[in-house]
Image 1 (cartoon, rainbow, N blue to C red):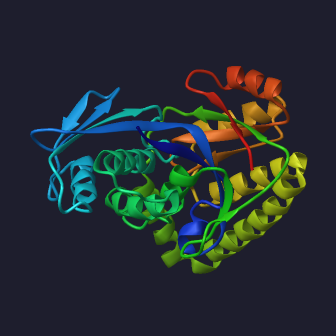
Image 2 (image 1 turned 90 degrees about the vertical axis):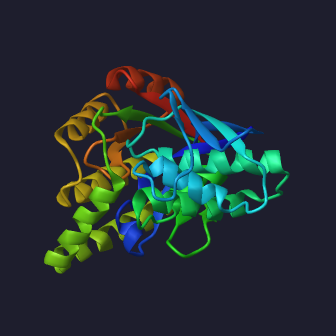
Length: 298
């Protein structure tokens, strides 16, 4: 059985695309997949009831991504891959990367390919490029490896360590988000007002570096404050919706140590940091339908 985790970017999204560091976590909710030999190549996805073949020129990104994945295995029988997706699509939780990692993991298993999780993460970047054009690489890396890590594009993943788990409550706004469109939005702002956007990126980088120290020290009060500041900087780049802002504010009023949007923005998800598990469960009820608790160990 192949598996790809979902991910949450704690701090640093968008700035990471432009060379700044980011901190991300892998969560245990994600995508499972199984591959079997068959009469023709086919990818099935539930609960969406989708079945499609590989097509490198297809309109549907999944067709093109599936074709790119299969092209990595030049000598093979036809394969049918069935994937069960337990993440909302277009919500900032790395759904496309989790599908890619799970699909490649399942194909590796049925073909007897021995590949490390690190190598699996690198292979899944091919899949991610179909969906996002210029991905940072953080989604596919965290999906394959998990944990808590500092990431900078082009560098090795740097795992972070702490004896204090992170209690995250992830809430879905119900608004779809396109990473490709949001990255392009920030690119346009950078082109039109480089000084303003560069200052925002520099501020985000400072927050990321301080958050690394807070995580390692187990200082979640300080981490929560840094999350709130990162949310403000992302809002200044026009990435946050009214619904996401309202959810973050509701979580803070209910006792969250900090809350912010996560992922590309323009919709998708936010998350709140709770001081302990029972508080996380209470915040889940505050954030309502579609929210869930993720406990992450660094």
